Image (cartoon, rainbow, N blue to C red; front, side, top):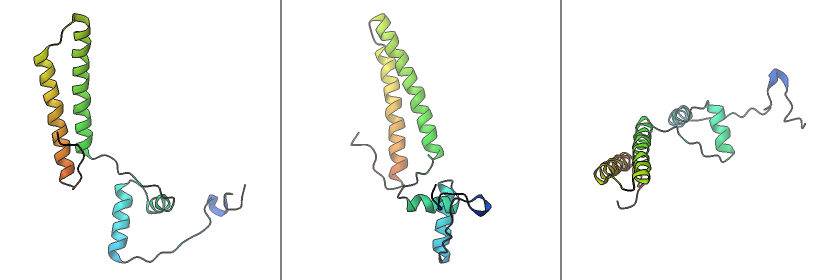
Length: 123
């Protein structure tokens, strides 16, 4: 094991302390970003040093959209299973769920458009 990898005094593997001077705005941004990515400042900076782009956890809205899409997918799967068994599709029920999926996708697109992100083609 190399010296830098060995545990040293205090049980630390990392032996180099780096001081960085930040102005108030930079420090506040560092704190905000680290908190947003659910990391302490040191871990967040090490991720950046390793060129790993931290990914923010999904927002509450995205979690809700995901749950709704999962629920709709299960319903559409059940329709497909029934269609396979019976030999026909309940067109009205299928269209209802397909419309619901499109509404949820539209809501997702609007949510991200507020942030300037275009996600979905021209549907």
